[in-house]
Image (tube, rainbow, N blue to C red; front, side, top):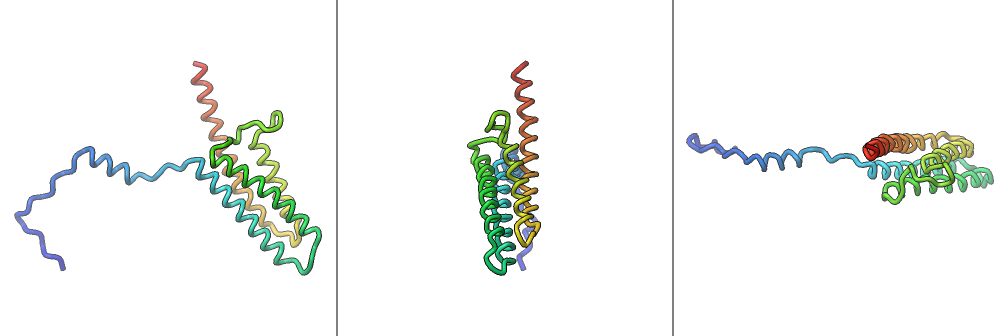
Length: 160
């Protein structure tokens, strides 16, 4: 047991306001940046691919040409989707960047996601593992429209 403090001991001096402000800043949680959310999209996309491979290869009795062809196509789609999210996380591109005429990267990610889900569901043994791609797509959708509000506010501010 610790000894009792002496009754005539002076109370500790109150901390200075600057020290209290620094302590308050240190206890606040860090703000979530879109960059870290794009890394979550990359990780989930890669995990969906790994689980799809596990289900498909585990369910094959022998060499199935359709399953192997489907896995090759799915691999290309998932690598494209994960690469797109990684480029956004590295801030080398943005989902609003135009790619083909009026198509931007968000629309390309939509096509990749829909094609990935369709191919993944059609691969024997027809598991629904690729429906997990809807999570990173939903995050990308949210970030796309979150940035749209900021871009519209910036344009309105510059017009004034």
